[in-house]
Length: 219
Image (cartoon, rainbow, N blue to C red; front, side, top):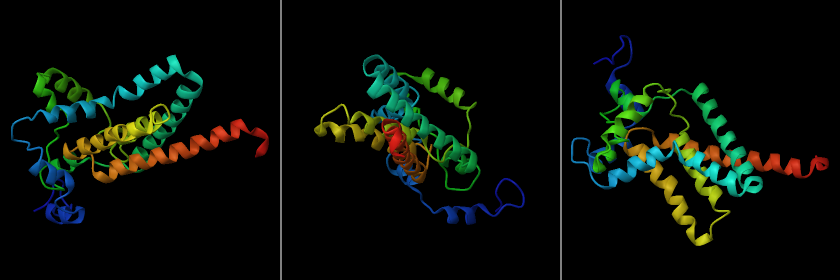
């Protein structure tokens, strides 16, 4: 058996090289069943996935209004670094997400289910709109995951405003985002972990920049 383009290694050998079953396949077989009914908690998965497009900008708007100097500017700096690292990754390491790899026969069948949960509350229109818009985006921009990176950035940044007991609640957001991205076929686990790593790099670089600005004569 040969994958779609002639001359390529067999699909079976490719599947073995990628490892099988990957978490996406296991979770779609055991938790989110593509051909089964849509469960209520899939709405949380869809909302979490879609929040990527509004959460960071909303937070920046709030910080601009209420804490411009100590909130908005530091967050914008970290957000910009994370995003630049993501774009650099897309340029240097263009990577297909699981749903695309499955479509081309490189791994076991995977369905793209990130927006299916909108069906729980009759949101088929929103699902179609976002799906249509996604067709015009970079389809091989999977490594690192900015969905994962931005969610962790928000959670970590907000720890400076909220009490320590609430931090596990904040970290539930990137944890749910990881599950949402992997289980619905949008990303591999390594993509999301790489996105999390970008956040660490961004905080370190931003802090270095801030220290140099606070003490210009010490360097």
